[in-house]
Image 1 (tube, rainbow, N blue to C red):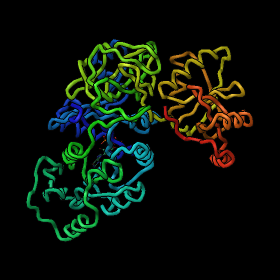
Image 2 (cartoon, rainbow, N blue to C red):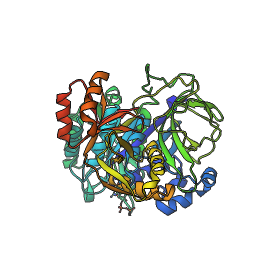
Image 3 (cartoon, rainbow, N blue to C red):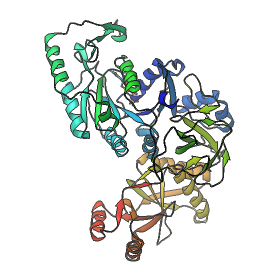
Image 4 (cartoon, rainbow, N blue to C red):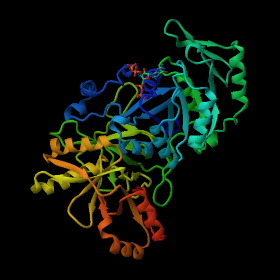
Length: 507
Ligand code: G4P
């Protein structure tokens, strides 16, 4: 039943505690074998994935892209949003496949740059957010400060749902406002091991603070939360296990079950019989010898059955999904069926692209999977000019995967790649070499940013005639204005009021 699904992501700045919290959530959900392994990176992660047969056969690692756990009759699908190391559009796009998010902030640091960026994406899609203020076992900023910061920086109504009884050396537990009980630290590790004080005595200085916290904010309103206007705030410590169960309870009680998804011609309801979904991520082979990929599909409607035929919008003819990869609490297996909100991994040879819609009747086109204006643009220069064809193929492939965006200028032969994070450039160069045997250099481009153009044909043609030198086509052939500066964008926008210069493009 899709009403028993919660599909969510954790958004945070590196080091705020996402990995630790993920482990604790999985532990609570009984996926114990994963605890302590989530953090495994690089070689260890690859070695571990060996137990998955399909991964062995195809050499693809899908480990930890989707983690599923169960508690209280609810199935939770937690989608991983890679941190700064692999920061890319991938991260953003994953947020299009969730129904809600948990925002983790470090009690000593508050809102940090990446939290804010990810938050903006959630806001664009009205994804509701539960806030978890982590590390209250350490010295942090006063609770009121943090609440004010969330409210001001993100323009959200905040409602504290719990409160730390002291922080750092004075930390004596977390008070749950709903029950009035305090979870207490125990033993030398000062962890929460289940000791709950139903009638706590709270030292005077903290008692006053808590009264203020309860009185000074609006009542929690689940509709305001689901509309993306209000965030309930939980204080806790992932490391010491405080607030984790409360967080799962909040996801269970407040977080929305699978939501309808925007599509051409209206929203697609999860209750619709026809099976449909969209691809939000494509992961290529870890082994450059193989060209296989896993496309991650978020199921939007219908009950998916193994072997079912679905038609990808980009292909036009049906494919039979014989070996979908499913993600279960205890293990990942080849699945027999899946419900709206679930994620399915579909092995393919590059036929499925990020943004593709899949449906039984090929009659559904989901909208709102954004491309983001790249923040870094580079010219690609071949060391061996005879490899143009290979380069074009590689750039097309990698842009399909969402690793980069590619822009083909209307004048001149030098292709331009755009990324949102520096690391993607390194990934690009090494994958060009390893997988496509293309040696390339990246040089500064004379442009600073790109904007997708929309408007009446006549105005577009006119603009094109005057600005050929600053125009390019993206992978889909859509017109893009390559701007020398943000000022340039503003100037052109003013001169061409009929046209929109968009920083995002929805497929
Ligand atoms: P991330 O995935 O968001 O990047 O953060 P991660 O969970 O890796 O946590 C970053 C650091 O913060 C880790 O310490 C982790 O142990 C610590 N941490 C996470 N939650 C809490 C908490 O509730 N309280 C305290 N005091 N610390 C917390 P590290 O020393 O960088 O890594 P490690 O060597 O301990 O693994």
